[in-house]
Image (tube, rainbow, N blue to C red; front, top):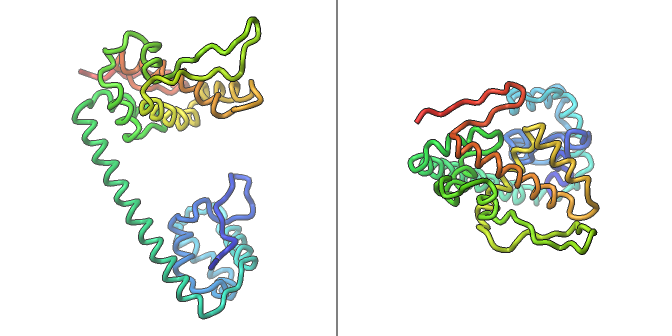
Length: 261
């Protein structure tokens, strides 16, 4: 309610909202430093630009535009009774402190997970975290569910273990678009692989193109189907990397790095 029109940017083409993350450092500072929206409106534009530059550490490409968008949001926001501002400011500050505390705890837990996984499977962690977008937590989750890659004779057996096998819903020559995955399989491994693949596809042009192609092939369940099919392809790569003890390589360089035993 304090800044009711302050919302997160909805993509790169959004020209209405000033911040890409309303819980980021700059947006948080705006919420806590200004008692009311009138403080922003009355501030000189050059002073507001300087304030935003300071809080963002100069990361805004066009701070003047950000200042203008912020003022526009403020002007469109609800006006509160002056007696309500203190209560809102206390509530906002308290919630932001709690969010920061939880984020700090989450980082600490993530680090402990990564350290523990490295102690058990250092090579496998190095292999998986070399994949763009795959962090130590997803890598640790995948490793914990797979165990030793030597337990699987090929990528098909690993895919089956994770549940990436389809039942046949076809009738004669008609191929159904709604073939379902088998219900058996390791649901945790399936989750880690899908989430890791969903991040990875944004960095790899081949996987991005594959996902896009599968997305356009059907009329229903577009994202879900495309992601599952892309993850099945991702499983093949994960198996190969772990089995051959190689790091991920970018297609632009074509380099494969062998890990020393």
